[in-house]
Amino acid sequence: MEKYLISGGNPLYGRVDISGAKNAAVAIIPAAILVDGPCRIENIPNISDVNHMVEMLYKMGASVKMINKNTFEIDCSHLRSVAPPHDMARSMRASYYFIGALLGRFGRATIDLPGGCYFGVRPIDQHIKGFEALGAEINIEHGMIDATTRDGLHGNTIYLDVVTVGATINIMLAAVRAEGVTVIENAAKEPHIVDVANFLNSMGADIKGAGTDVIKIKGVRELHGGSYSIIPDQIEAGTYMALAAATGGEIEICNVIPKHLESITAKLEEMGAEVIEKDDSVVVRKEPGKRLEKANIKTLPYPGFPTDMQPQLAVLLATAKGTSIVTEGVWDNRYRYVDELKRMGAVIQVDGKVAVYEGVSELSPASVKACDLRAGAAIVIAALSASGTSEVEDIYHIERGYEDFVTKLTALGARIKKVQVPDGGELERVN
Image 1: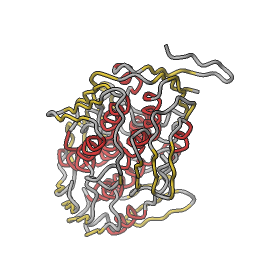
Image 2: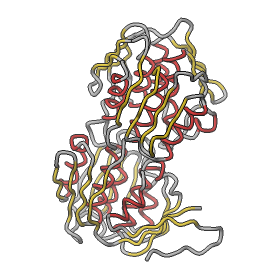
Image 3: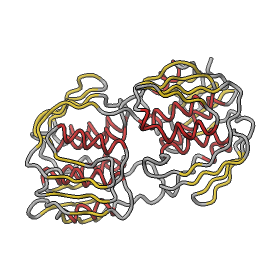
Image 4: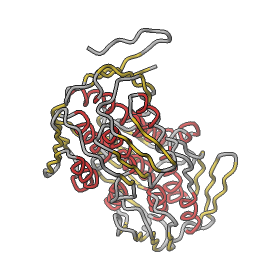
């Protein structure tokens, strides 16, 4: 078993380079199925979720060459399997992108219902609605999805009943090589949707309107190979912004697109942190020992405040002056980390999608665990802000989405170690 040992309470200083966007990479990798020829994909984050997606493609028959840890050349020209490996598909939510890509390429896909972080019910009904509108027949039985077409996919107008990133991307993948024009209305607008569209367009697709609520896709017969570099990760950047505000000191977060961070920047400034935007970086500083101001947060689809940043900002609210209210507007069950923060002395009451934070002067070190990816990052931030030594378990959640997490934190002055703990063994303390 691996854990983090963290000795917190000291301000952090320095620069950190942000990796490629996880949520873009896990969609762009299966999108390579649609391409006839080699795709060179750069700025891929070296994280377990992405590595799983690449391995699934390889096991399905794709040619995969690792140029370096962040660059792969993928050629799906000779891929023939329409069924990703069962156990791997079940282990992560983003495996559902194989459905759209395989339908678009072969007119057939067979895949286990996807897993991933549990935030309550996460239906794929809008994905199915889109596939069926394009002419696919969907059968779900014994935890398996079987999607087929009788005479190929055909363009159609699809109105999404709710704004959903996954369905927007998945329908876009299926429609790229469909006959005719597909229109997705009430589409999600997140930066990684634009990135997936840009990747496909660079390979010969005809997609317009990505980043707005109406996306138009004119089907093409084939896509050609090429090179593409994935955008920086908005949520990784926001996590280090929250870290700077939580611990004090000054951190420059580099290789970012500041516009993607505007909702996070606005909330941090409201709370009293200083944020300086540059061309491709942001500097976040807070005087060590200064308490932040209370704030209210409601998570919304982009360009609103991202749900994936809710736990990290909640750590700041836990020690801010006064009473703060968080309303989760995306997922039903995003507050599982609250019990872990309470173990560190936070005062929080949760009622459904609303959480009330009564700010305390400081958090205390404790033995805590990562409940999911973003909650895990939040717990690390809390441990780094608390004076004393904390232990963080279940860190595999965190390493699904943060590249070189310990290395990057250590470079900022954080005292953190990943340790292997044998059953009944003694933990090595952080120096």
